[in-house]
Length: 340
Ligand code: NAD
Ligand code: DAU
Image 1 (cartoon, helix red, strand yellow):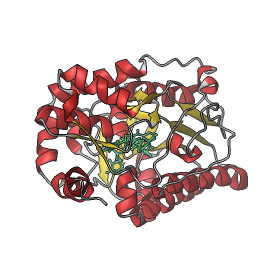
Image 2 (tube, helix red, strand yellow):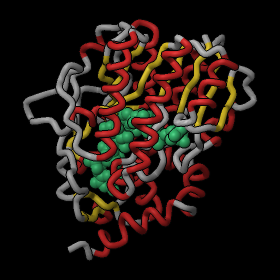
Image 3 (tube, helix red, strand yellow):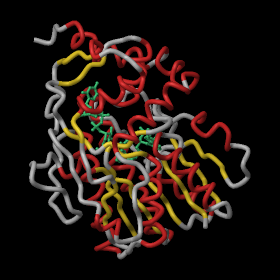
């Protein structure tokens, strides 16, 4: 099978490419990636020599290039990881989220429709909005996104479903929980807190830190996507997570304990605007395909933290480069307590 993996140089995409080549060595994987700040060739540094893997640098919004790439590769399946993915960045500068997450997905759908290619779209639990205490989201729940990022992902999901209904194209969608693991850009909470703690810098916890997330290991996301690609029903949506949540303060505690660092590094700072209090998904539909997560949330976080401890060569150049400008904009006033 020939897979076009968009966003394959990002966090989850690169873990998926690595997983897929190991478990399906007969398949051809073509990574199509714009190489934004979050997309890094070095995430797959050890694999570029593999004749089964290749890279096209391009934007998913470039219809001519996507089309030509699919024709050249004779693509059987597009797996769409490409996206702008950070909620805080979507609050600072939302329009690129519309361009990539909505229009970019729409372009992929157009090419898939024209060339008769199956499309698997990677979505998120954030499309369900924040979830009341007595509920776990199921795939048929209404979408109620609350950030520019989540709204752009929800719009993309609806386009994918509309194309399936209108044109009958073969699509599937997975909605993932908060992933942790190797190669996650350090703007996200677990790598940010891990690398800050290693550097002895404060950990900026938004608000009271009682927000709840299902911290799932990226490995389990990859096996969940694989289960849907191999055994999922065309046209269906599947939630992927552990089905269990913890508070952000519990997650921070695991980070600090794993690194042997003091609680005094914790700083409660001005909350994220519109911060969703709780995400929680029911994953029974995916389990019915024979999938089970390998990692408990606590193990997943601890294992991710250890990766950042052992892989400073990967994150140190990122943290000392363009990331500093973003960090300054997002955290300087918060950490100085000047946020009003
Ligand atoms: P990431 O930010 O680490 O990587 C995104 C990748 O997409 C990068 O390689 C980037 O270069 C590429 N990209 C961005 N815009 C592009 C464009 N216009 N054209 C081509 N490539 C482009 O993201 P991630 O955390 O790996 O997330 C991957 C997917 O999974 C996204 O769709 C995201 O919404 C979804 N998701 C993420 C999580 C999570 O916890 N990280 C959870 C659930 C779902
Ligand atoms: O739930 C799936 C989503 O998980 C994905 O769709 C997104 O792409 C991914 O970025 C992630 O979104 P979150 O906003 O939940 O993840 P983030 O790592 O940014 O934050 C996790 C929690 O930690 C959240 O409640 C906000 C909080 N947080 C985050 C940062 C960056 C802090 O308290 N302080 C911080 O500095």
